[in-house]
Image (cartoon, rainbow over all chains, first blue to last red; front, top):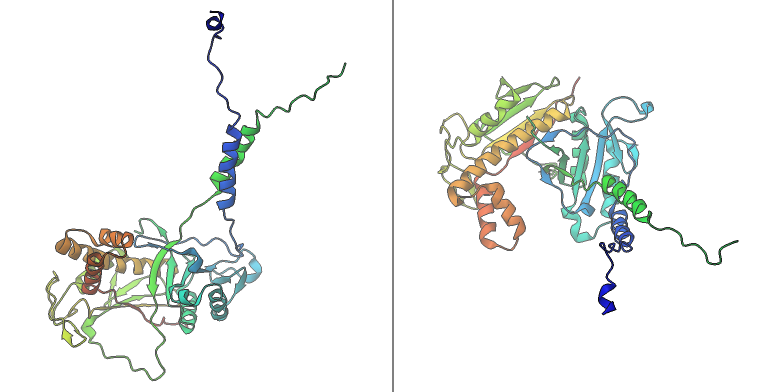
Length: 154
Length: 208
């Protein structure tokens, strides 16, 4: 009978020994999936124009990005018309080589689906964008996307 | 008197440390999806290419000058009025459609425009030409493109609503989820063909 009287009073503590394991697992997941920006921007982050008719860009591996904005370093000038390819400041004439280079990374069959995303600042000039566009047309990179943030583009 | 056995390390705060790191990564992870206005450039024309002659009334001319002002069909206009003007132009339906693969599309039966003689014949003939200056702000340029696209979207939505009882946006969304669905594909193609997006970018004028 003494067996029954041995009951302790109060709630038994919940065993939290496995909590760190769970948290670590989540931690590793986020550490692995977090992608740090591959290219560091030599330009100021472009202030994207807002638009309503935006489409999401799918297949990230097929997207090449061209940045157009103001250079951080004032030795490149102060206009909003600097072009960055990969991680250096370039001119529109370097665009074909840049596209060719990015094409090498994907398989032959996927080349027609490659999209060039132009991330340009609001105050960039259309002339710069046109120069890039003409160069893109020269190398038959016909799918482009003018990067814009979704919002009430009044 | 030293204790014989090693004292256990207290691992109670391990969870706290891990949580802190976890929260840091949670906050810094940005799952930003790139979005933008997609466009398809026209292919480079061969050197001996002669552009087809297009009737003046089928071209909707939008000019943006260096000071980001708009000139539409030789009249000044505010950006917010552009959408309605573009809709009126596309949806006019004043004449015969173009001949595709030997089949004449005939007059536009679904257009609700004024059917004016001086505006576009048919949505598939209506061309919007955007000409900008080299010095135009990119923001303004994109805003104009956005308004023009919005005009097309609204017309497409209206037609899809009439024909299938579902807006074009939803129709496209549904098609994206079920790529193999032939009937959906046909509906999407049908609407796209009824209001094809023909927006051309003219060579910009240089600022000199």
